[in-house]
Image (tube, rainbow, N blue to C red):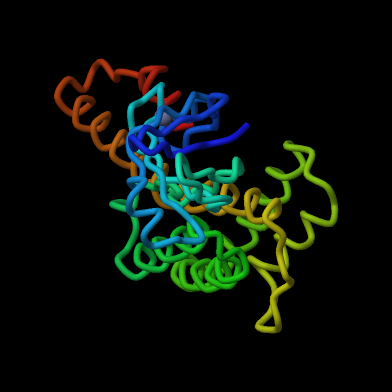
Length: 234
Ligand SMILES: [Zn+2]
């Protein structure tokens, strides 16, 4: 595959590019939207050119970068291996967290989105410690058990499991270095632990309060929690 910026500024690909979209999750085609003009490329002779596409599935913009291969008199050829510039931010229902935990978890997930995996691991330890100082030692043990159960259920190998355990619950010593694959497992595990302790707990309490209110309204008939509500909490 090759990419060309022609003299008339047309942006041409010999084959369509398809990528997993960080916005909608679809494996969709990238449709060309904009490129640096031929005149600018000839004049500035850059090493790389930025290209703007849009996702064929969700229409969100996708920013990519390509190395400039040759600058000819009729067209500029770009290298076919497009590098994604923008990564989607990890999402979390931050509104349920105490302020200090919220700030730390945001920065932790931003490190992951930036691909700074060891900075991410270091922030995972710090955020976990801050949360657990308030939640107590019983929660620490429960989180550790939940982590192991979660990783076992997903058939995660023993090395990754012990690395993740050391990152989150290790003593104050040095953290192990983590690979991109381990970071991808860690981010899901971390979000799950924080979701369980803060978001689900808060939603459950709210549901129980509503139930008690209606029970008080008509003391004789206690309405059981509806099944859909429970499914949402699970
Ligand atoms: Zn998309």
